[in-house]
Every structure is written in structure tokens, then in C-alpha cells.
Image (cartoon, rainbow, N blue to C red; front, side, top):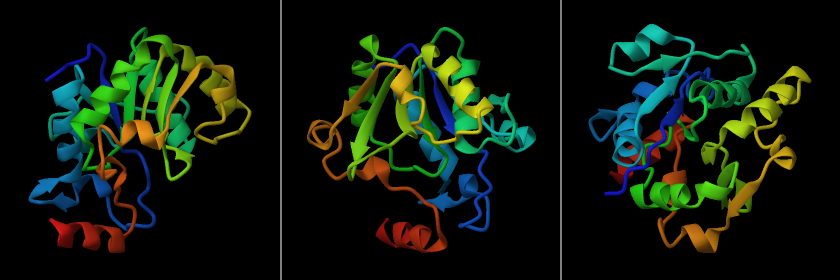
Length: 196
């Protein structure tokens, strides 16, 4: 299988308010969700690391962990940490609650990254910022957004080159849209568990 020479980051710093417990360690078909995510990412990218402030929890299960540089800025702060961590390299960024990422989709997105600062799929008419690739150029625009208190995940896109991957294009790689199934609530977790 193709392997790209840049890493993937798993954002795991959320408070899991809707779930009521740490989503990273919910069991999906006998495996913690975050390990399922990481195993898929490792098939495609050079490394899978975690962005979280609870470092020890993730180091115990074998992850390299980086923490937010600009604290308490929600997912955009995590995205900034991921982009900053990788220096001059691109990075694929996803969440710990997306255990059904499809390798073919990841490969497809990565194959488009050469000429763009952001490669982002459009799902149900909305961009999916936690299933996207970012270049180092994004660091400055993201930091400026955070410093001005504007935390919308795609708010910086007008300052960088963005390749939107429309549904008709990405469904060639993931016809059922499984990659975008995530676990935010107990009901979603129950539905996913029952479907396995």
C-alpha cells in the first residue's frame, strides 16, 4: 500500500462533553477507538502521533504526544499544534473519534496535496477539517486567527490555497462515506457498536 512521507496527527484534547467519557478509549470491535484510527493512519502516513494535553495517558499506549502551544483554543488550537509539530512537513489531521477512516480515501487526499496548503473533503455540503491535510504555510494564518479569538476551524482558509474535494470525487475512494462516521454521543456509539 502507498505510504506518504508525512505524518498524521490525531486530535484527542477534547472534553468529550456530549459523550461523558474519553472517546479515545471507547471499545470499537474490541479495540480502543484511537488505536483503530492510528493503525489505519500508519498504513498510509509515516507516523501517527497524538495532540493532547493529558500526555501520560497516551504515552502509556505507545503514542508520541504533542501538546497545545496556544492553550484553551478548542480544535483550532489542536490543529495549530499539529501543524507546528511537523515543521516543514505536511500533516494529515483527524479526530480520535473517527474509527472508520478508509485507507483509499486517505491515499486519495494525500495524492492531491502537492500543490495545495489544505486538501479537505466536502461531506454533506460542509468541509471536514478533521479529515484533511495541511501544509506548514497554515501555521501563521491559524495562529493569527487564534490570537484574534476567531476559532472557526476553516476561518483561515481565505489566506491559503485550498483544494476542496467534492463528494462525487471522494466517493470513488469511500463509496459509503464510512470515514466520516464519528462518535460524539452515547447514541452514536450504541448505533456503531450494534452495526459491527
